[in-house]
Image (cartoon, rainbow, N blue to C red; front, side):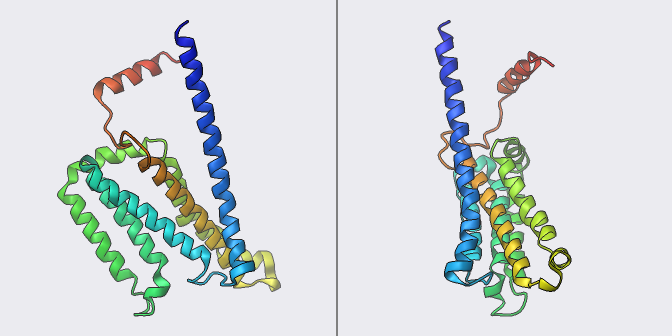
Length: 231
């Protein structure tokens, strides 16, 4: 009976945590159309490189890359995996800034992106023992689905749903490429918000690293607990 107040306290804490997470995510979802609306009604840059939407995308990618790079310094046991993550999001950031790099030469963004990718891969190869186990630990952590869904939204859904052929068929003679671009950029911003949120959940404000390996005793205890659950 003495354990009952402790259990109730844990349940209340879990409920409050879920409510806070819902409110946070709801606020982030509201932020996306608010940024797009600011570009349309206040700033007037549309979907250009100077638009608040594209600047927000770049800042979210910069934050995500920085979090992975910082953890690569703080967690030597997961350094290879974290360097790969930082390099990957760094390449995405370079791609998002292609409009500025095109001032040097058309398609110039590919060269720094390839160079960064090669450096990250070569560095991770030097510490290859810190790649697979931490990656497995991260992929089974609670923050990972946010990052995964964000990547799917950016790399797949925004490309398909924002294709010109779809909106030409819907809008017909009223079609304007600016509408298609705004929809695609808004979806990309949504994806980057989820990616950054997943990175923040994983690496900010944690006493214990999310990539800490699971001990044998801890794994055995978890399996025994699962075995006791009803079918």
